Length: 292
Image 1 (cartoon, rainbow, N blue to C red):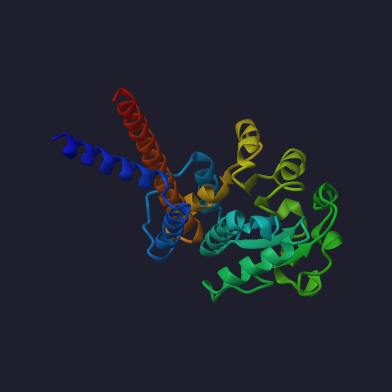
Image 2 (tube, rainbow, N blue to C red):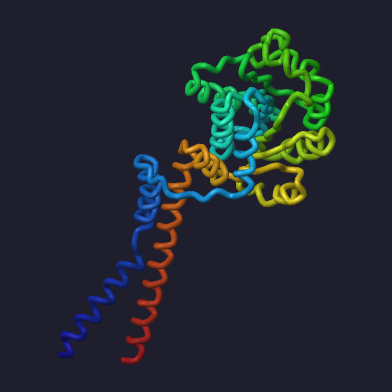
């Protein structure tokens, strides 16, 4: 009887030792699978929509056909994972509603970000023509100075587009002379210059509605502008972009990313529970051994 009990105790101790010393590479493997599987096989997990995101969607949805939206690509490749999906969703919505879009950049790398986003979404709308339905005016240094100049006219700041076509040869820009002809301004921002400058100048001084998309880490400080009414709406991080995709009923990279992120969080929680269970089992085993 004693031998049998000791055998069971020893086997239990061996199991606990094995669990305590699980190779960390198995954890990395589970995390890797948690990321890859939802991307290869989309789960389409439900994503609720917040008021700041819905405000942008509703505003774009309610604009009359042919309205002009200014999109400012104020970010670089280091944050494109969060901001490209937001830009794509907004541009897709604008083209779907037959609005006109003007792209500019206050960040040097914003030019290439805009070119890639326009090229991608343009393929979904073969009827859309560059120069007539959208233009990419490219990057200009100056930050707030550039925004102040928009009151004087686009031609003074952006004499050509990103392909060096004179602005006078762009049909859209013959109708849109300055910021007064723009119906909505959206800053896709990873820092400065970005949303804050657009709020301070384009909204506060020029009276134009301004919305934004930013990285998740920057979103909390933007809520001050939402509360004051200076910011129409906000897409915060990948989740904000995923919410916009849900409203469009067109899941994209943001929705895939949120699926993966959700599963990874679940796996991490399970590992935390597992490690705590093993810890308490080990402590209990030590106490039992000490009593003998």
